[in-house]
Image (cartoon, rainbow over all chains, first blue to last red; front, side, top):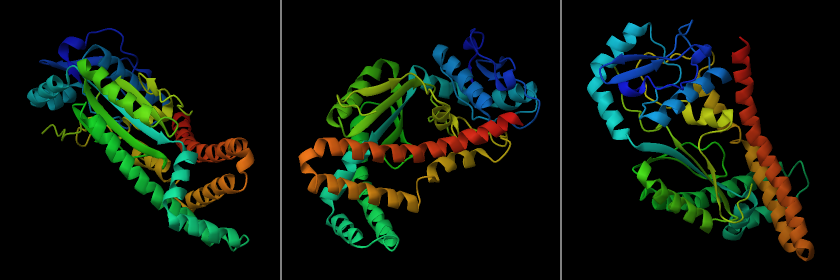
Length: 240
Length: 116
């Protein structure tokens, strides 16, 4: 959803299933929709990419409220009269709040060999378990190896927790909003969504750069954005 | 991909399908009762990627990785640099394989979705 004034901007790519994207407007708000044949959307590569591309294109010209992938309504009247009309005030306020702001994703991943070396140095239990696992031949050794690995992981999580807190604290001072996200792999120390005012982006990037400088050789720091505020619109969207 | 100089890897938007999925799945404004996704359900797609490493294999991987680290420190000090490089490359490619296994799982499902 975008302000009505932005809905006529050219450049919106085709929507789900290659259908054209057309705005449905009520008052100051427009929803960018495309017709679908079925009432369910497949999470295919083409559909996921198309949904992202439309929101991304909108974000480049105006504030946008990304709607969750796979949201299908019966017809245009349902969008205009059922969704937009009763929620104009709320959506307008959300768009005003998000105007001039963008989401960035921050990810800090360990160089595994470096952090595992720290694990061994910090944990006497890991060193003991390692010595024990070296005494037995495989496959009887498997249980000891699993035990060793579990100890390693537990110590890794302690290191990770301390790093995560420190980095989040440092970056949080420079942003309007911050949400930590689920990690996809264990070597990720920080995965977070940042909401940043356009004029303050450099301020935030300096903090990230400073983290990267301190973590050189130990972590890889990735910063993606500016993007639409995917992680900052998840309030109750009930149209009733 | 080690940022030896402490640089930040910058991208304006997600580049791979896995990154796009990571950005948008389960995200965005929910309009009650209107989110309809066919097939196995989107939660499954994302959970697949998260659980792939959390298993006994993880423990075994860590155990083997720290065992190798200790060897490089205590027994091969003389050629430490070279040995470390070799060992670390091995450890890294293993983790990479596990992670990509998760992403491949997603891609496979997406591929099936496309074909239907």
